[in-house]
Amino acid sequence: MMQISSRFTIAVHIFTCIETFKDQYKMTSDFLASSINVNPVIVRKLLGQLKEAGLIEVRRGSGGASLARPADEITLLDIYRAVECVGHGELFHFHENPNQQCPVGRNIHSSLDSRLDKIQSAMENEMQNITIAEIIDDTKAKIAEGN
Image 1: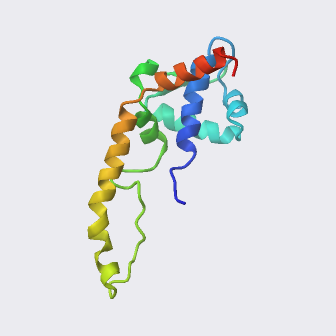
Image 2 (image 1 turned 135 degrees about the horizontal axis):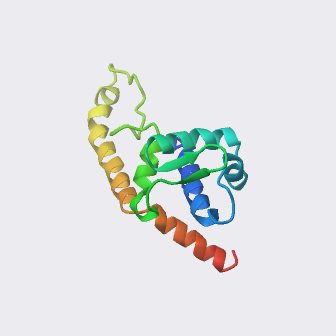
């Protein structure tokens, strides 16, 4: 099955770690990678994309990563757009060359395209309504419960 890459969920994990542990640990790519259980190179690449999007600040040397603005002002859509290479109407990758000699092949694009756009818009609208603060608060509550 085709799916959104793990970059999005890793990025959400990064934000949640930063806000959960910021007063206890330096938010280095190594620290974040140990929580996510991925190579630090992946984390550094994502931190770069998040920084470029104005969502994260990264201080070299002693600083580590921090949120560039309050968590309740950063939506899942902001994060998704920063790390996924998906433009408007491009969530679904359409097979390139359906057979034009076939009646289905000739018409599948026009039958499906507007519906796929509608699905992507619905997903993006949902993501726009969820802030990273909600994910962070939920995660902190689960930690407090002993999970």
